[in-house]
Image (cartoon, rainbow, N blue to C red; front, side):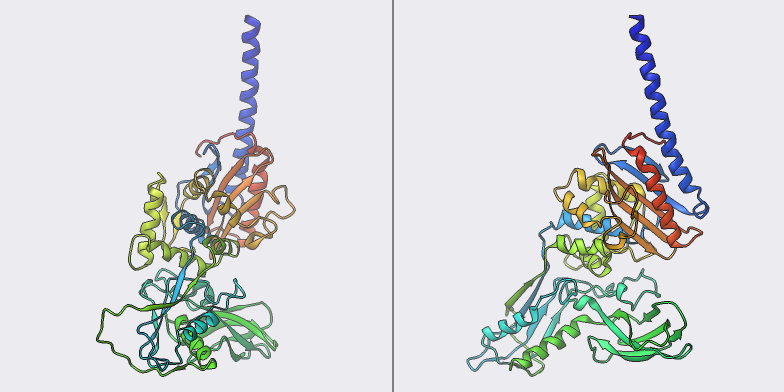
Length: 489
């Protein structure tokens, strides 16, 4: 009996030593990371968790709120998959507000009723000839002349925050900060074509694709000896007056930058009128007044978007702000008649609060993470990641929407040729003074770990911060299979 107790004591001591070594090695990984030269003064929130058990295996200030940049898309897309469903589709309808006469005249208007679809004419879904479908629907209705106008119904999304008031002025007018409307078109972005000459001269504006009637530029660009696209485009919301600042490379016959279409629905209407005229259908653009206010519009065509999961995949793979913001606004319509950013935030917070997540650790102003006013803790992000894989029927779809580190999307160069290549799916986030990553590590032992590493205001370059995060994950990985825990520091 005495021998048995001695053996048991020895085993306990051995396990304790192994456990402590594991804790110390993980502590070392965390300490080396937070004490690295460029991160010593940074605001860092970090957490790594076992998805199955929810056990924290590494952390540093995990409840502290930190600016997440595009890691906020994890909050947006996960909530959308849960509330809307992976098969959800946005709907845009083409309608007429009266019946055509016997002589093929519509004594009324055609109406485009927007449903917040970000994929109308999008470059990410090629082969979508919806304008041809709309023209065919008008023909099939027996219409050859429209006495009225093409009316744009954008009432589902509020215009008051089409350009989020919490975005920085530096961003507004650029393609990645485009407006969020019930009717969006061509990714709400145009390409500006430029030709540059000698260093110090002003580049020449060649035009835009697509052509946008009335769009005017004040050109303050300068040709520079080196560097790529260091140009910015500024303009007030829905204004057709834009200003160009910064530099582009000198001596280029063609150099392109991208900007925001001021009112994409106007461009859609222009393109539809052109298509109708090409097919022999006349739009007279008269003012039409109806006394019969009970007249219900007749739907000529319902254009449905690709499935939400396909849109989410693009959102997370290439960090598409345009898609993220439209998904975000759509969530507001689950409880409210009109989509605003504030209403979307209320829906998102209520959803996660009902699942026992601490929404006090979430400050959310947009869906893309573009606003520097956003804030979230690593612990909150990890809680969502754990929920999605452990409790959601959409979990595996959500995990696959995150690009594989070392090979895909915005993280194709992250962890490349390391022990973690092929084992990590994650979302990146980067704006000025912010570098963040969050996602899943699929360990060799079959365990899956969620992680979030959010870094603000480091003293080094953004690339150097990314390298420190890489180093931390690589150093931590050999110890994850032991699943030791680290106490709060």
